[in-house]
Length: 597
Ligand code: GTP
Image (tube, rainbow, N blue to C red):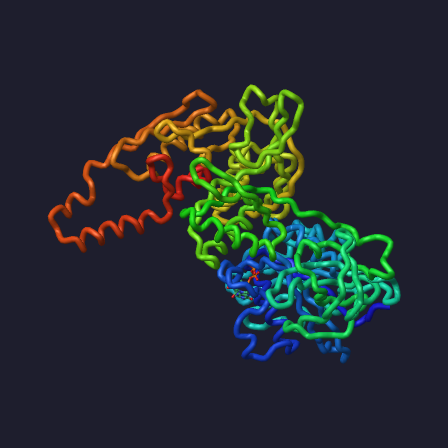
């Protein structure tokens, strides 16, 4: 039987409620690291993560905690990503645990994302242990937040530990609670191996490293293992645990959490949620809950300079090594040239990829407005899936277009309820439920994903002064009156500026887009005509007037170096521009569609 002094747990917390700070305290308390090594937060290991304050990759730490009863417990803490884009990863991390620590900022309260993750944890039969963090803040209101946890999540929070990850108050009390309340792992050591892959990542020196929870059996060095969903076999080179440094062991057995390195070259061979079993004595069934992650949001990424195309391909393939949910395929745009159509889990994922490409690979890129997947039923009966407006068949060939609909849960304080409802209606939302829970209201809506992709999150935050929070899951496809609005510049259709919108809003959106283009496109040596159209029907037109004077004209007769400087300056300013026909279009133009107000 599995070691009964093990406790496996995750932390559920909304962004900024103090998960990283708290986990650092745990490590410090159990002396996993020296003071000096503690200087930086250890769990969020990627720079970008730290800068944006978001945890992207799940990781784990194994700590030995000497409890007040004199026994030593092995605490395996599995870190989870804190954003809605990564909810599948969260569900896999949670299913590797027997318990979860719900951390709520006592000066803020419960947020929709944490609620969703708590429900996942409760459905997986985890023991949820609430704690109230940031109790040191003058604005902390533990009684109110406690009541909120009970009202909204429905778990007993009366004796939730009050703590401050910052000052260190209550840390040991939390560890005691964990040991007392979270059940020890189940699972037979002698059964055939079943190890859940919580996360896999690519390391330049080690190849693919997988973080696993052994559910039953044991995995040892030299053993032949099989990934059950891909049916591929590998020989184990190393197994071990994170303390948080990698520490080798001879084997891991039922109940334990640690890493496996098995000469795997691609993370696709060891997917999150898959089961490793013993190749010579395989388990009958894989662990439940495996899913292929599907991108939901797509955008074109193009190099500003066509010389960077190969560089971009390289960079994408490198990022892909570590991020199986990023997809990409070559795309050719008349306007932007050669680039890639990339698929992402959501908007945050897209921003992260874009930033890494630019920062780590030093590429200047133009990104087109994101779009969702549409199902198009053609008059000939064929159904195509379209993730690029330029793939839309001619109107007379379309019998129906269906768009993805999400189920959204929004938590909002009563004061902002009206604003949020207005916003949801504007976003074509249909209310399915509304429930008062203490001072907050829980709203459920069905809403088109495309509207959420646009700017829903930012708008929600602004109409609620930051207090509303939101979580969603994909629900179904539903028919809608959708049309493509094209933008024409000097009579040429710019494919990368096309957007798909609801017919009722197409006129307004077309006018709005044309106006925006007028503001964004710099004046040139000639008049630039901007038009918006649906099919051949022009719905809006405007002009960018020609520049009156050539910049170089004022250098006439001046010295050459001054002239060159001016030209250089002009060239620098051009960096994020793309020549389309004879007009230069800046990056902002391609994202203008994102800002609708
Ligand atoms: P993600 O990694 O994005 O999920 O955020 P997080 O939940 O890990 O939050 P993090 O630990 O980075 O803390 C967010 C901010 O809150 C930081 O500025 C911390 O210094 C601060 N903070 C964390 N715990 C406490 C606390 O107990 N008291 C006070 N006053 N501040 C705290």
